[in-house]
Length: 308
Image 1 (cartoon, rainbow, N blue to C red):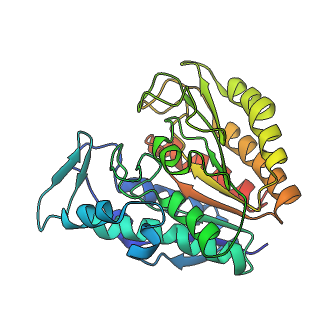
Image 2: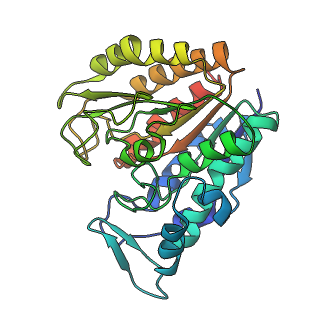
């Protein structure tokens, strides 16, 4: 299988201040783990290009894109949200993170690759059409999906979001868009404190009770996600891959394990193989307990590329 690994050095230069959980080490520990465990030997590595304003504008308001880019500081930090800040490298990193999703879409959509994983930051699924929040500036996966729809001409895309936090930005962008089915799990009553009531008929939101474990997630996938995905019969899957539901991650109160991430990926691979010639683009979102993040991503990527 041809599989792509996409990253960019700018992901390690964006920083939001000492002690911030969304730190440069997140991409570094993933890259190191995949390299040391031999996973990258089975993938072709690519440098992410910078997304263009036209590409960003398919998912975001043009005025918002211009405003975010204009806030880039020459030094120090600029706060754009109570927990979201820019340093002099943030704008570049955000452009390349979104560009990674576009490149992955091209490679999987028409470049002969079946799977792609984007190890990039800042994450994206909290970024709404016209607002940055939750560590996110541009909605990377949404930019990729809109590229698949509007440039590659696909008609049905499924977005799967298993981050512990609800992907409110993705819901804001895609609610009511009949070309996109979004299925998600997230911890109920956790930031951004919404998602329990879906904003459109194309949203399958499954809140999970605090302190539940992987059993609750598996039940949700089997009973809610899989029937919806198979009925929709997507032409490509996109994954907002967050790893902060892990029991070691202090950002949440769920109890998933490394094996749960392998299992949920297995279910998505089966859907992709049945519905869309195996085509999956996965983009990193959350995950802040670094050892657990690295292990869980390894399980996700191994399963994604059929590497046992």
